[in-house]
Length: 214
Figure 1 (cartoon, rainbow, N blue to C red):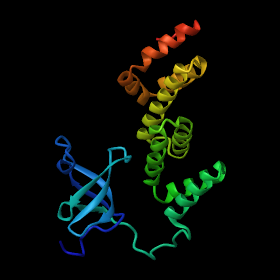
Figure 2: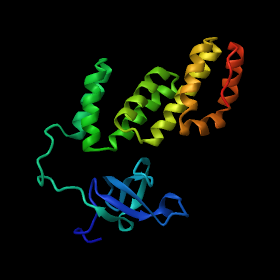
Figure 3: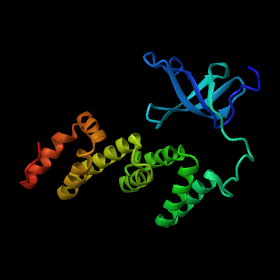
Figure 4: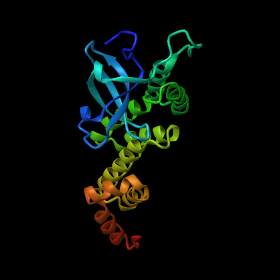
């Protein structure tokens, strides 16, 4: 490929959707995050612009739709998106939630894909059963990027898992709160059906003598 037209880091590119196993869609889009020479690592977006996965595609299959700005074409943020994001993590680790939120806001404005990075970080404590931390991080992402459907889905799943944990410990009021918080979000309904948590919600409500909404 001619170097003049070769996609570079952070370019928005288009490529055949068959390369990511999607036979129905004609093309897919994503941002180049790594260049391996003959192949590119691309962060793939859905049709709403939300990051969904990473894919390695041949260089010749990628077509640049929107080139990343050349260095020096505009005054860069002195810290940069990565700097703001790393500072946000440090502040978060030290319990400075409000300050961390401002750093994450700056990072997301410069590079929206960092919202997906923070969401992935939140998934680790969720897998370990540390639901309070995971839920707090998911809620933080959604405060700054409310339309991030993948994070909405993960928040709903974490609320359901924490509710189940509460119910097993006999903390039925807390369980009901979490189940109801997840039930009213659209992404949660699929997760609830998948886990059978709606049934558990009804049992918990009956145990407390409360009516379960239809």
